[in-house]
Length: 483
Image 1 (tube, rainbow, N blue to C red):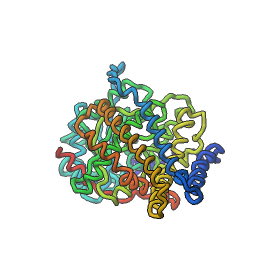
Image 2: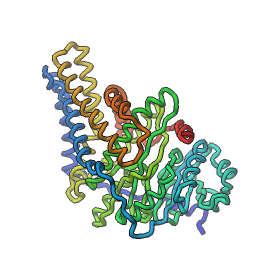
Image 3: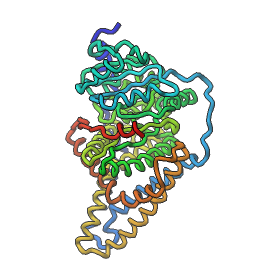
Image 4: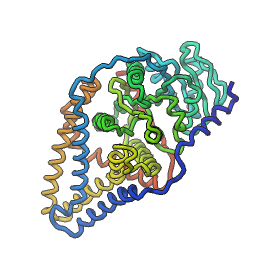
């Protein structure tokens, strides 16, 4: 029997994930320094040249983004064919679920109800209560009959729902809560579900089947759809984020096909428990603990030639609360980008390293460019405005032609992504081609700039070594439960 603090102590000891600091490899310096030096040269051209070449920063941004779209379109061609249903050659592994919750009493019953009514219910559900002070304890006691045994102690099973248990912890962040819950679970696979995420009825079954079919898989990500509030601001952000999520998941499928997928969503992902514990659990020092963990799993697998795989499962679907206001959106993207920069720096030894296959020679160099992509995008937009208001119309007209050509490419890619996503997920109701095309036209001058703005704030937080999430307000999930 665990003593009151033994689970906490073990969870703290678990998170020792990163290797000792290493000298930054020359190839990493060359790649990162190159993309920054290129921006400085291209930006300087705006003050010395008079033709369209003065907008070289924007041209480079357009070329880079277009090449990425072509790569994704090429790698996702297999989605045009019906994906075969592969019968499992072994029984599905046992599945447990961790619901990470900090002051989520308002939405927790909705999330738990979705889990308890799965077509294939999980064998265990542990609520990793990260020091909630909002009435979560009273809710769990009154509605589910869960009795608090003290910090760091796993409760007895709920009398009404025996798979459900409560692990109350001192507030220490999501990663520590996940680590503590991972240690007390006994299932072979563990799904992490945020308390603001609503699973579709077949989600657990789809994840279990995928692990039964793919023995080398250590992480499986599901498909997420964003849900915002029904305010005017919420509808605006849901419109853009819906199509952003669709494009992103098609992109993840493409990188999966290239054996280089790094980005999954911890709000709805499933892990092979022994693999996570082997590499040291989730890192409490990282702002994006799920993203960092994939890097570590990949590195561990390559170093030992284990052949571990990370995949996206199109038949596992969920809806998640997404930002509904500009402030909450910028806070989310600030954290995401600062965490991305953290991880890129910590794993700089893998960048350009042939030892890590296409992950090292293609994916991580692309991510190196992504670190300054917001700088390219904002500079390109700022220069266009400067040319326009400065009367340099000889530059503005050809620039506008380039922008129109890029919008046409984006329109084609948006349509392509939506078509593939529908075939992949079987969801034909949550999006429309007309609204998707309109979003492609408006996005470069609105939502895209907001994304870059959030990323710029992420750079500031990274440089200042700020390591806080910022408060998020859940506004959309209650609406989702009524749909």
